[in-house]
Length: 331
Ligand SMILES: Nc1ncnc2c1ncn2[C@@H]1O[C@H](COP(=O)(O)OP(=O)(O)OP(=O)(O)O)[C@@H](O)[C@H]1O
Ligand SMILES: [Mg+2]
Figure 1 (cartoon, protein in one colour):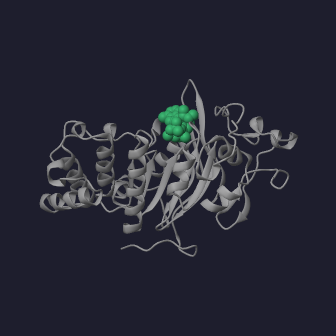
Figure 2 (spheres, rainbow, N blue to C red):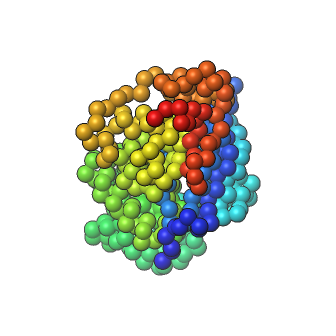
Figure 3 (tube, rainbow, N blue to C red):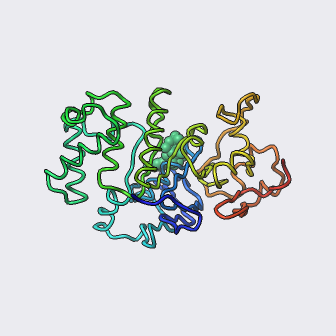
């Protein structure tokens, strides 16, 4: 069994100054701007942000899954000390599935409808981990048990459409775990599910994470979900991480007006009894690189400097920062 993380543990994944831009003759999108974060062994990082804030693009960049013809990617993404952005195609193929694996929001579109669940899980193990068919079949059965799919043997022969949404998401988790990855990237894996099924899947993921000592980046727009699953949290806005830190620090004492706005605009465990307030305005235009604080247009604490200056990350502790020029000027 792998060990749980500690503050002194080395980083498993280190993303530094990541910038992702899409450019076509018709448009350009600065989707990710100077994003830096790290992930330790056995740690769950919740990435929280509204639609279009760059969460999925960040995850795709980590796996080098962005369309090369229209994308420019700068900065650094290291797994252990190995640079992913300059990795050979052969090495990258071994990395995907074997070291880093992904679960998506909608498992129906991730499974191929013409192959059974069992065929798809075993094929993954044979392709990425070089398992024999016999070994892969045995492991597939163990995996369906691990994700608590009842009558696992029969389910292996089912086609994706024959499973309910919740069961399909469990099967998707089994597929993602099939090559024993160190890092799981989860992109809104519970958003499409009913609330009751959503909590079951979250608890399942948490159990498996602790049992296997997995490291997880869990992307969500739901603050309650981010709180439920994360050890640490990174809040994204307009393609940037505007605040990050341990879950308790960020939730109890937010140090960016956007985080504060998010916390008071949604229902979550810490919001009980408090009135909800919407954040006025709309997300920033990403067609140009940031030239000021991207939240300044919507921020009640912004001054002229915020509207003309790009904020740096202000370190508030180890692995804790806020990208706000006016820290301390607001309560
Ligand atoms: N292939 C692409 N080509 C052009 N623009 C893209 C592409 N993929 C994403 N974008 C743009 O990049 C920005 C960030 O998108 P991203 O998918 O990362 O958002 P998100 O935070 O995951 O949002 P959601 O919560 O809706 O999934 C958006 O403006 C999106 O339109
Ligand atoms: Mg997304």
